[in-house]
Length: 473
Image 1 (cartoon, helix red, strand yellow):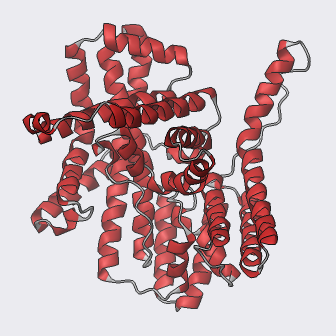
Image 2 (image 1 turned 180 degrees about the horizontal axis):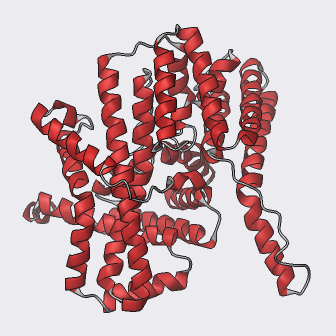
Image 3 (image 1 turned 45 degrees about the horizontal axis):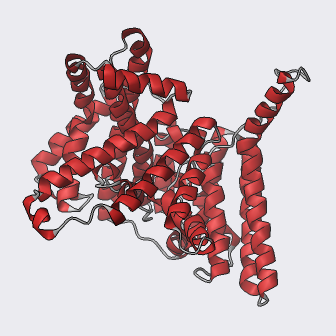
């Protein structure tokens, strides 16, 4: 039941209408049932796995909160961490290891490479596993208290808008909203409608069409070898990634707003970042901050304050969390090295004298730093859509040594017709520092924008609807 499907529209309309007529107690119970129904729509078999993970961490959370002895508290925390990571590892990474093992056996002429046990990846397992882990870790650290009511905790884990692809909510943020009475206001409806519309626009009009540009470019780049096509495809893939993932979380936040919930902001104009470190503070923030709090800071303590090693390890962990493959490992190494290099350069070689700083145009300097950061990120995304390091080298060689400006301009115009409105609206967001600035501008301009988004989303019925990228994570 994808957010872009008619099935979900009917499902949400029914849920919302029933929700409005229930009191707080029955609202939570109804949302819990609706969330499990939503999850079981994909594959009913994995609902049991979700329930088991929920029950384990609810039990561990209670025990950690009750125990006074540090040794016992640590025992329950380790049980929670090991159990959750084992479930995640088996379902997400087992196929990778069994495939490599079979390749080794095949190399030595032992066994049949084609004989392999493949395990289906349950949707959303990476997200709800990290969400439940953060709960027990926060209780252990004393930053969160265990919830006493199982149904409230189960709703926190399975809340259907963010169950499959985030944002990864913290118990300290979402659980109080579940436990408190909620009142749906006109402001909730207005903001929710905007976020849903904007998310659908990002996903259907921008991400899906940008993906078509990428596929066209990759299909023709080998034949034509034009660096202009390849560079535009890099830009297209960057916007495809951003609009696909952020489009999902916008819709999730919008749906939650309708029911009086406020989910975490997951993206804060990442392609406007002035450096690579700032980019990762703005990109998929709920995931980045999870790794910051539960991986970066502990490693920082263990390495006696070595931020370079800590950042490098976090980047590798983030890449492996997405997918365990050679390309994902290379992507993690690449971003880890780039962030380490940025901090070294910033610390040692960017100490510009005040007199020289005055000669620089702040606006021009910011523009070029943002442009450079965007291209550094685009290169990192190459590890997502290419199959090998050799292919990356060939593509980059064509960009630098077989670049035709005419072909680049022609294809960039094709791309700009999809990303133009996005850049315009997000520039307005950046200037006003308000993601809901559109709701405060002239009503006639709002009508024109909504009409355009409606046409863009529903106008091209024949456009291929693609699944969200994070559904395979």
